[in-house]
Image (spheres, helix red, strand yellow):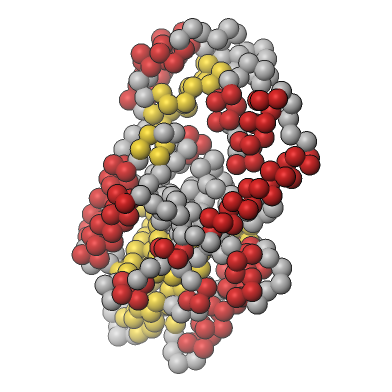
Length: 391
């Protein structure tokens, strides 16, 4: 049996103001073609299917078309919700969709209810494959349901894994069962990028890798870089780059083969990017004249100019050679850049929502937020995030 591990589609997302629906359609074309070509049996989507809890109608239609085409190509789908999704909305009609081969795991109540697939070997040996889904678990909303007191990502994920292990143990009493777990979380050791929304604001949301020990394969979602953490614990990453920090990523997925003897070969799958990303830095004249940057003329560009004096009509001049420059910032040589940087450039460098808020406060009044002000902003951001998680 062949499983295709994907995650973080983020349907409906824009790239620095540039719409990405066409690029996302192109990715789905590649995925469906791969499913047909390689006879993939199950497509796994480990959360963040949508970019927003309330996706636009054309975005919902895109997912609908994708699921129909994947199942028409002969594959089943197992899908969990991420921190960008509304678990309730994404999980609508789950029992009906299951009849068509689309299995949604968005509820705490379904943690120990796996999707079961028979495994048959060439010599006649048989086993079962149990695919479990751990959706993004907002600690304060699910702690009571999971019977834990500490509202932390570690505690609720540990409780979810415990339920899965108990169910798996019972199933193994009647015959060989192999396990695959989908989980949308931040696992220790993962390499982050700028385009992920932190699963916790003001605290560590990471869970230890050994939490997933003993499972045949753990298909992680949340981090956008495809990476192997330990053994069979992997992130597929996002299928497209959603920030310039991902310009060096090789976007793709993992093709996982499972037989009666367990997980076998794991193969790297690569998706073709619709546009390259270029991160350019230097003085304006050098960037406009150097043949070294010829390849970037057709790419989406992030340009940082280091001229001691900001050039007049800088964006217009840059776009003469690099017409798809969508981020322009200034870092004059010989300064720390902060005093001369524009507000938009300063905000573009913010690492998270708190950084954006503090950058705005610094801009309008000329001094950074102190500790008490940062805490007040964290409290407000946490309240907004919790409200969004309940949608």
